[in-house]
Every structure is written in structure tokens, then in C-alpha cells.
Amino acid sequence: MAPGLRLLQIVQPYRGLLGLGLLTTFLASLLDGIVLVLLVPLLKHLFGTAGELRSGSTQLETLMHRVVEPIVGGLTPTEAAGRLVVLLVVGLLLKNVLSYASTQITVGVQEGLVRDLRTRVFSHLLTLDLGYFQRTGTGSLVSWIITEVDQTKTVVTASLVALFRNVVVVAVTLVVLSQISLPLTLLTLVFVPPLVLLLQLLIRRLRLHARARAKERAEVTSTVAERVGAIRLIRSYGEERREAARFAAQANRYRKRVIRTQRFSSLTSPLTEVFSGFLVILIIWAGTRPELLGLTRPLAPEAIIVFLMAALRLTSPLKTISSFPAIMAVALASAERVFEVLDQPSKETDRPGEGEARFEREIVFDAVSFRYGDGDPVLSEVSFTLPRGRVVALVGPSGAGKTTLADLLPRFHDPTGGRILLDGVPLTRLTRRSLRGLMSVVSQDTVLLNDTVFANIAYGSPGATPAQVEAAAEAANAAGFIALLPAGYQTVVGERGTRLSGGQRQRVAIARALLRDPPILILDEATSALDTASERLVQQAIDHLMRERTALVIAHRLATVRDADEIVVLDAGRVVQRGTHDELFRAGGLYRRLYDLQFRDKETTLAAGL
Ligand SMILES: Nc1ncnc2c1ncn2[C@@H]1O[C@H](COP(=O)(O)OP(=O)(O)OP(=O)(O)O)[C@@H](O)[C@H]1O
Ligand SMILES: [Mg+2]
Image (cartoon, helix red, strand yellow):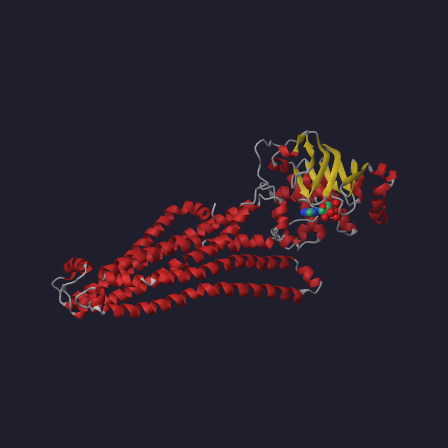
């Protein structure tokens, strides 16, 4: 469906308000015309020609005569003029009150549209698969949700209201004009087609640039978002100057694009002004030549004045009406980008036939294979069983596919081959929500939100009481350091938890997993080395976490590996060894090599430390 139509659908709930806006707009424009028309008798009284109905008088004058006569009949010209002025002022005030109301209503509608669209895009993003986020930069998404959505609102202001208002103004004005003099009106209208044609030419170029501008704007936003996130990296490698230069180049490209876009849109103003100038000359010239208009006498001066005023009023609405496609082009370019996000299929929504997950017996990985997109296989026919209440440790060199394998269990991705069975039911037949409700995931790089410690621990357990949160923190060995924070549990941890140390972040994440208290645990141990004391604190927290739980642990810690009921050794996406620590240690092979590399030194250190 065309983006314009889809936007209309989103405006749908506001149709009542929009109707009201259009009504006030209509009334304001009508009053505008009336005020204009009232000028004729006023000028007549001031010129002292009131009451004279000339031959060749227009219908308007006859009508006016009939309407105005009861108001000013029998008054002296000065009194009549005074009364008309009062009427004019009242009309003017009323018109402006209505204009104000219509603007306010329009703002209400447009901001409603923006909010609805923004919320919809954000909610939709939450249903997209992880691959989408890896392909699309954060900056582009931010730009989509903030800037592009904001641009779409001009559709309401530009199209629905401004267009309508100006069409009404043009119509009312044309009626007034034709009532004063039809031939002169027709002469005026000769100017319209060339003006509209010229404007159209500009607009075609404008549309192209608007698209490019939306894209470049997204790039600028992306750069800011990404580079701010990488501030430590930039600083430690002294890349500030190069980053600044890179950004300046980007900002400059954007500047050029905006100027190029503007070049076309700002041409519309001088263009219409030149046309207006010609129009004034033409009207005065033709207005004073009755034979040209087929009249016996020249038009009355007041008629020419009002005609001029009215005719000049046409240019601004005509400009708006003809620039309407340009404004729409810009807004629709933004809308297209927004709908691009909304059109991404929601991989995360539950499908019919998916049931509630329940876990009593075991999880079975049955010849599971996986690849990212159409890349090389990352996992090939991985099989093992994780019985309830047991711990399976995944061990293997970096890049072996351990994290990928663990991601399959909460269905962050689905296997491209083989199956994962929960009590005999393939995971793909279970709703993601119920499945994830059974497990806590502690990921390799700890993710904290820029919120309080309390909120970070209680994330995912909305009903948790302070006592429960504290108990979880206690069990995760985090209570001690939290008590020392400036505001305790109410301390804000900074973006991604940067105001806490690595070990503290890990323990907050473990507390979060503990609080949720799920039957299944997925633990991707952080590889970052901690000092012996922190290591022990974190290890104790992990021990608490794994107690009486079914756990899939990607183990980098000696104690975790030793405690595992089974160790699965992965290499390049294949299971190369399986067994307990003692069995594998004796058997030699990859496990032994990894063990020697990774744990030997630590074991001696730990032994010495204990
Ligand atoms: N989103 C992704 N898209 C494409 N390839 C990916 C993606 N994530 C990981 N890979 C690739 O999959 C392979 C396995 O990665 P994975 O993160 O599972 O390794 P890992 O065993 O957890 O390693 P580590 O011990 O370093 O954490 C790697 O070769 C990696 O390049
Ligand atoms: Mg990993």
C-alpha cells in the first residue's frame, strides 16, 4: 500500500479532531472572505459613493446593497463607515480566534500521529529477530524512531489542513473576484497554469534530494550514536582528531544536500512574488480599460482596490497548494523509511500451533546445525542431553560456537538443521514467551541498563519486593558492595553499568538471574580475568545460581568445569569430546590441551591463595 494511504490509516483515530480542525479552518477562511467583501461598502462610504447603484453593477454589489442597507441605512457616511469598521474588526477577531483554534487542533492531530507511529515502530522493533539488529545500526534505528517519524507529521499539517485551508481560501477568493468582475478574474487566472507548471518542475528535483537527505541524516545520527558508545576506544587510541574530521566530512555532505534541497524549495517564493508583481500591473491596467472587460464604464476604484487585495491573496495559497507535492514528497520519503521498519517480518511473534513450554525431564540437542544467514556452518550436528537438575558445561576454543549454541535454547535463533527437544517437544513448537519464562540467561558481556541497582536486579521480575531483591543480591555476593554505593540500591549504574566494576556488574547480573528463580539456567561465563578475590566472590555467586537447577554453562572457570555433570567439548562447531572432567583429563586431546592452557596456572595460583 502507498505510504500516504498507510499514514491516513494511522490518522484514522483522530478523524473527529481532524474534522473539527477542518471545520474551524473552513469557517476562518469563509470569515476571511466576508471581511474582504465588507471592505467594498466601507470604501464606498469613505469615497462617498454609497447608495449609487451604477449600471453594470455586479450581482455582488446588488447583494451587498441589500445586506448592508439594514445595517447602515439612514446613517451619515461617517456613522456608516464607523459601524462597518466595528463589524470588520469583530469579523477579523473572530477569524483569528478560529485560525488559532484550527492550528492548535492540527498540532494535536499531528503530534498524536507522531506518538502513535513512534510507539508502533518501537514495539515492532522489539519483535524483530536479532539478525536484523546486527545488520541495521543503532543510529539508523534511532534516526528512524526520532527524526523520520517526526517528519511524517508534515503530511497532516501540509496536506490535510494547509491544503484544505488554501483550497477554501482560493475558492472563496475566486467567488469574491468573479462577483466583482468576471472578465478580470479570467484574466487573472491566465497566470495560474504557468506558475503551477514552473513549481512542478522544481518539485520533481526536490523529491529526489529529499530521499537522499533522509538517508544522509540517518548516517549522521548513526555516527554520533556509535562513536559516543565507543568513547573509551577513541580516547585510548588517540583517534579524536580523525573521528572529528570524519564527522565533519559527513556533516558537510549533509549540509550540501540540505542546501541543494533548499535551493529548489526556496525558489518557489521569489517565483510567486514575481508573478504577483505582474498580476498587479495587469489588473490595474485592465481594470481601468472598460472596453477590454466589455463594460461601458471603468470599474469603480473601490472595486479595483478590493479586487487587487483579493487577487494578491491568491498567490500565497497557490504557492502552498503547488508546493504541497514537494512537502508531501519529503514527508513520504520519511514515511517510506518508517514503513520499511514496520514491514520487517516479526519473527518473534508466536505462531498458531505453538504450545506452552513445560519442563520435567530433559533437554535434548539432536543433531543441531546452525549458520548465520547464508554464511558457513557455525554448528554441525551437535548432539547431547541435559537432564533436569544436571549441569552441562560447554568448553572449546574461542569461536567454536559455544555462545551460538547457547543462544538456540531461548530461541534467539532457530537451528537450521536438527532439533532441540524440551521433554520431547521441539522448541519450534513452543511459544518463545513461555520458553524464556523457564530460563535465566547470564550472558558473556553483562548487560545493565542505565537505571538503579534495584531496577537492574528486578528487571524481568516486576513484582519483586525489596526483601526479595536484597536476598538475591546477598546470594549473588553483591549485597556487600551495594551497601557501600552512595545511594545503595538506588544508585544509578550509568550507561551499560559503566559506573560499576566488571566483577560487580557480573554479580548484579547473577542476582537478576537468581531473583527470577527459573528451573533452567544458561550461563555464558565472562572471559574477562578477575583478581582472585573477585573471582571467588563471583564463583560463589555462580554456585548459588546453579544449585538445584538445570544449567547449560559455557565454562571458563575451573570450579564450574569440575562441578559439571558432563562436559561437551566443541571445536569449530562440532562435538569432539564428551565426558566428566576426570574422564576427559585422562583421555588427553583437546580438553586436556585447553585445560593446560587455561586452568593450569590458575589452579596453582588458586591453590596458593587458598
Ligand atoms: N551474528 C553473527 N553473524 C555471523 N556470524 C557470527 C555471528 N555471531 C557469531 N558468529 C560467528 O560464529 C562463530 C561462533 O561464534 P560464537 O560467538 O558462538 O563463539 P564462542 O564459542 O562463543 O567464542 P568465545 O569463546 O570467544 O565467546 C564465530 O566464527 C563467529 O564469527
Ligand atoms: Mg562466546
